[in-house]
Length: 626
Image 1: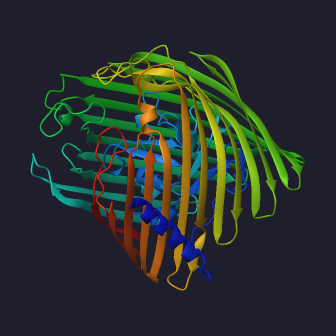
Image 2: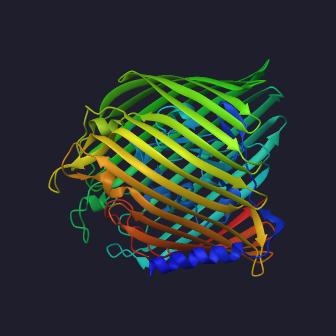
């Protein structure tokens, strides 16, 4: 039955695409410019690697209320959630683990050194996002350690914005908790205000969300506050300052340890976690002679407290506090024959934990790349990242990009890159009810080669690529049998071959039926493992195999839209699910009212271990632009 539904979806998209179309300029999804640190002002079409852009306009039509939920609809991106509304979400790209994706905010590194489970604790609300850049492949040349299989950069700023945005919503599944008898209801408010004072642009954004979850002990309470300032001193000099925080307290029923008795009261059923993240950064841009200079400094602090039995907090408690200070310098210069990019960074990490101990580590690196025009239609970009780590010494990670533009709208490209990611402190030292760390772990290292094509015109944007990735010393939590504790080990090697196809419209298309916007993508991954252990691996069980994502927006009236989104996933362990979400919204001057139905089929499914995710869920919301 599921395959029949998929076939219908493809046929439906094909039917719409075959109609006589014309451009309707009422609604459009514009191309955005991106900044790849040193090589600036490139568009998604011009960049010589596979990447996706998720704009705020696209997010407005999605049946989501958090950035974590929105990323579920991006090709090749897998979001594995344990709780509602992005309470805790792991992210992987093209089959990578949640520790192998680097998270950035306006180019600043945000990934957590304690555990990748905290990478998506974002210190800003979804309402503040301008767009999201999703980079795929080994990206250490661009971003340094951590971007083993890709990176996600959230772009937030105040330039070009003025006014107030307001978003309020409340949702339920009309069910009640069987123990406490309260209704499952989740609600939230998001607010942003942008204004200009002389040469200074300001943005203030906040979000307050809470709810009883969707099953026993899945309640949450989350607050986010963010401020951004852009000061254009003159045409050649500018300053940006940002600061944000996230406070998140939630029930963790079965998150890390299977419940002792899932149907009744148990210790794990009453576990609670509190995570607080604070981030602040300052950068400036300068044009000195022909050089573009960009110095940066950032500080990320994270506090994590896990209580195994909230009624008896001293029975088992973990408290971790991490601090990461990063200094960066990026520079670029245009020559008659190409552009050179240079960079350096120093990162100082420390953690103070009752479980992991008091630890220090620092990392230093230099970057270099040169984009050289081979001809009027072709560019080549060699580069490298040279890294020194206080625990692992010196490593170098080269890469090479080449493209050839067959026409102004069609190009082929190749990307060959290498990358690394250091073990987290949880990998090294954690000891819990069912897990033990391993202080003998060494860094993961990846090599990825990719061949792809990109095509665009006024209405459509199409990408396709194939890749081969090899990861040496892959870190995976393993155990010899179901009665033993998990322990991380460096699996000798894993190899992944993959294919991705993606098609989307750039603008609203007018058909004989309804004006539409649509997208469709398919990702296939085939992973093989060279084992040096006997037993069970968490990575092998959760590895993505097939993913089909499609979306459709129908415009019934000048103020009435219906959005449909489909996700079909098959994992290596045989887990399979097909989800359909919908949003119907109407625009009344400055007021937008919507109704979301998530998981329309009320499918029972899991993404991590045996944690059931929420079934059918209805949300009523409104947005105002003032």
